[in-house]
Image: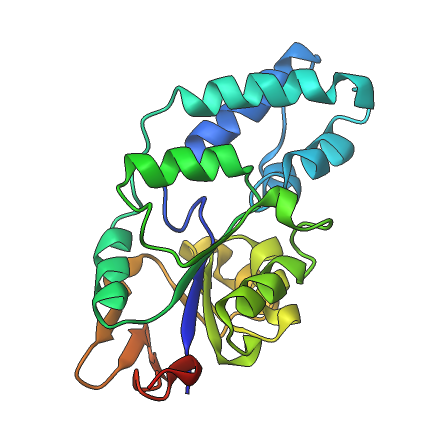
Length: 233
């Protein structure tokens, strides 16, 4: 029986792939080059900014990191965010059924706060784990382990939604079951990282409140009744 659902943010709850790509490509162009698709996949999507800087911008000294972080914040706080199609519907279904939810993101707390405010999700997640809450970002499992601990749930009873290979790896390494959102061209990568199944969007995911079963593509995940969940009576 599953007890809780943990969501990544970028690419899962909110559609930010284009805006994130544009920011890091602008920085790369200012340094005289552009980033390839594989570089974005390996070191941008699903990763914290400090990881991206270390791996893709080694020529930028650490003394300039704060300058980049300020620029990133100004850029991201100026955006109007759009939810990933179907995400708000699924979140509402889970909240209505009393399933505990956590947001687990490699983004800074200020970005998570902005996204949740714009999408009217401030009261949706019982727990929120952001970049500064753990010393090591994804693919290290610490963020998902901490989210489960703060929910009071066993990590093995948590279902995770992720979209990046690093995030899938983090969830699986922690001991959670993971459903990946990915286009067909990336399905092999996320399955290779340990995802139980892959869906192209939340149109393939629904929560049946009567049966307390979450259907994701071909798989079903059964959830404990509220009286059994997390020691509630």
